[in-house]
Image (cartoon, rainbow, N blue to C red):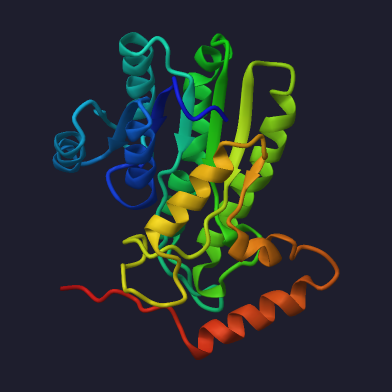
Length: 256
């Protein structure tokens, strides 16, 4: 994608990867609009980055999505980049009873959210001379983490949806790119400084470099082997990965 002269809307952008992307695009001179459920966090990002704008958005609520889309089209007629970044990552255990409410929340946020948000803006994006949709999936779309089975499945679903979306938009002005992050040291599951997690600054630097290309998938070099996983050897890769994670699990943040 072209990294300058854009008007960019990023969901889930008051912390972590979303906020870091917003700030990097802002530094390049783009008009950036951040979004989140909590006004205090939006205000914090806006205050720290004069020129960034903010909109309240509950990505799980179709009415909130429609209201945000209407506001965006009215206030920012040149909007041409949508980054579907909002996501949640609760742990679960598919070998036992799964909390249906948690599963519904994951799927509504991680999968239906991007579908609904894009649907609300797609005709506007198609009317622009140059537009981009960026869907943020995960390395777990290719190698699921068994202790986050529903999350992994939601990201796999978004990956396959992105493939279809890209094909269907092939004759329009809208390009579709996919970001598939590795484990990045953010507060998605609790920032811990674990050496297995990629530092956020390093992830953003490499991702911005790769976004500047025409690559359909933006994948940092460290996870290319995982991206190539699906195939005849898939079970061995998934089993080996999860066995290693059982031996040395992700630290789970404890309630204060």
